[in-house]
Length: 446
Ligand SMILES: [Zn+2]
Ligand SMILES: [Zn+2]
Image 1 (cartoon, rainbow, N blue to C red):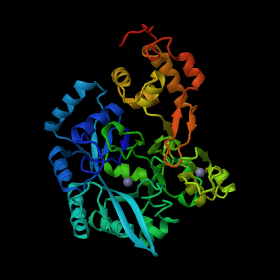
Image 2 (cartoon, helix red, strand yellow):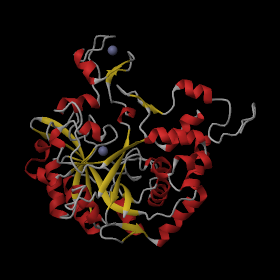
Image 3 (cartoon, rainbow, N blue to C red):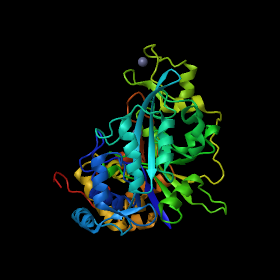
Image 4 (spheres, rainbow, N blue to C red):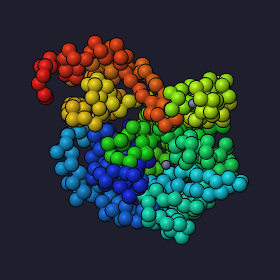
């Protein structure tokens, strides 16, 4: 069957996460977004693991569903908010480890995601990790454990488990991070490198960037939200077309296209990496931003102040790249670059994505079309126009065609992705309720 999976998230036990990141609310948001399989995150945390054991029961090999008792909380959560299409909500046991250790004379900081098919495996892994460091203080524990040794523990304690390096280009905490990562995967995982078959691109890179690096050709690229609050589920995700269980999903990640040529991992949903805070190079204080090619022509020196610029993620990719244009291996999944629906509605309405207006329209869209992914990917443009709003239809049309306007982030300044040009917005503003097409009454609060 076709299913969407977001496999890297965090619970309320991870630092800087929303208190709402509990199981019922994660399941409810998965429905709203259109996600069928959600990573539990944080299975290394004893309290979270206990809650998972109380709330989940095993179903299809290695997948879990909510027990009836939790389903009730979950339904009440949903009904008070919004009604969605009835899709199955499954969980898969995942955790992220932050490894900080010295290797070849340098401090390395690498995040890795662990996947296991059952609670017994999770418990065995946890027991070993608990002897190495504190796994109780944070849902994403920081351990002085070499990535290679973490992989060894996983392979030994959970033979059906697998490890995927997380958000591999983030500067401070990743496999290829410019500040504390490695130049080659083999330098990180050494003799166990062959057990790595997939990499998480993270919000700061997309497949196009990764496919500039030929040494990554043999790895599947997966995408996950890494969300710290349930409403951010699915800002990145994976689309599968295979049997609905852990083992088939693992197989599809290993070989997106099977031996008979059937595409089992059909696509990934991507955030525009330009939206991140460190995409391009530049200086925020000087208001200067440029792409890596321009910055290397300037030897990385800011033309405004003469000091070295802050170098972004794209530069790091290009540093390790050996191609000028991306080459996708045969059988690579399709890439869908999306803008979160709340951001699209926010742009159209001219108010913040967390505003009441956007919230109201968001709920209406979900009720009409079943899920956020349906709106962004599947509902026909005509249907969106006829049943909701011609402007939203036009916006979604442009998102699907990747006709968006990208302003890259740099030196800590967020980038932005928009659908309409400012002149277009001016003509749209003030004339009618841009979302519903109804005339607005002036000087009256709504
Ligand atoms: Zn991480
Ligand atoms: Zn400067």
